[in-house]
Image 1 (cartoon, rainbow, N blue to C red):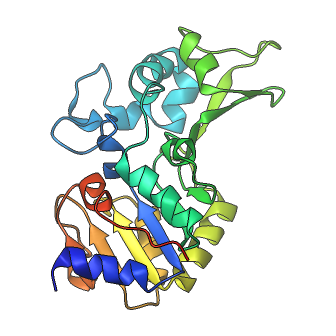
Image 2: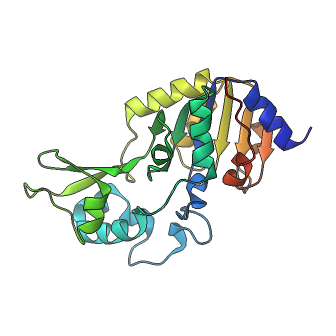
Image 3: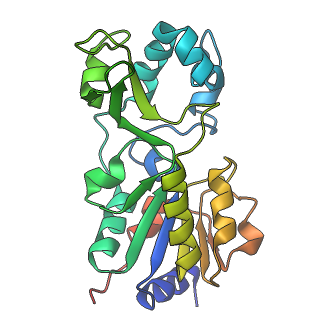
Length: 242
């Protein structure tokens, strides 16, 4: 049985699938990841992206933060790809219970998925640090500098910056979904970012599927490993409606 056939069989036989995804899920939509050769970490700025995307830098140099953030992090014209769309199809068919994502681009929701657990937040939620009023990503993108609330307060994206902790509620819900899953599909992630990557240690099943272009530290633990782009892999999955 080929890897593709094995993947199809595991999906066909389960109605309790959880998907755990990273930046590689969105690269096929034209959103750069962080650690590839052409990713954000390999571009040159006055400060390294790791520094810019930290809580300390945001508070001390909001102008520099937003110059980078508006230019590189708000890819609002990008559309869901085959992976996002197939996950929505699996959810609608009653097979996929949850998507746990490290991405902040909102493409899973744009594709129509409902149960999306965003470990690192979302660019689509922004709050005034003074009064708490909500603003969308388009407002932040159009600000052309530090976005301000009508009350005058500075806006902060609801994304987890370096030095900030993950949301406990989202973490607990993700942990519960993964620990109860029959099939866990991990896609488009190097599994190098903690604590998010540590969540898969809670998976108790025996159908761990890893889909990533490059190898990961968890390849030897997986029951099925496919080293291909996830959109290419998912586009070939046939979803049998229950």
